[in-house]
Image (cartoon, rainbow, N blue to C red):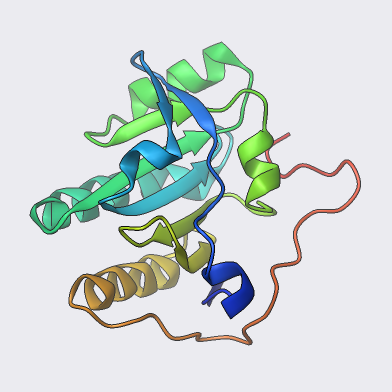
Length: 173
């Protein structure tokens, strides 16, 4: 599990925008959530830690909603039945979406499921979390709470450029 702040060259630019559809309907873009703190998680129906993660994200989102936190969980899967079964089994009050193209996974160099990104109100990436263990959830909650209190996240592992998948490897397939 990894948490790190992005290097200044990447942190200076807003996160890349991408379109996605809500599993309950409606089209969205990441950019439409600028003005809110966003916790964006990439998940997959076959991902065992993602199951516990939905409950955690739901609680975290409800706890900090009044402070402007928006939780968005996006799957990159194309299997309609698997996504529908997962969402039915693990209901959530936050926005659950799909990017069937997988482009968002490439933009954010998703190499593990789940991968979560914390974005500030201007859409800048400020922290990244990989994995869904209890320890990752604890660090995620501490980082979100510190950030909402006006503190900047600090790297807990070697900071550096994210090394995402190379070639045709895609963590969500």
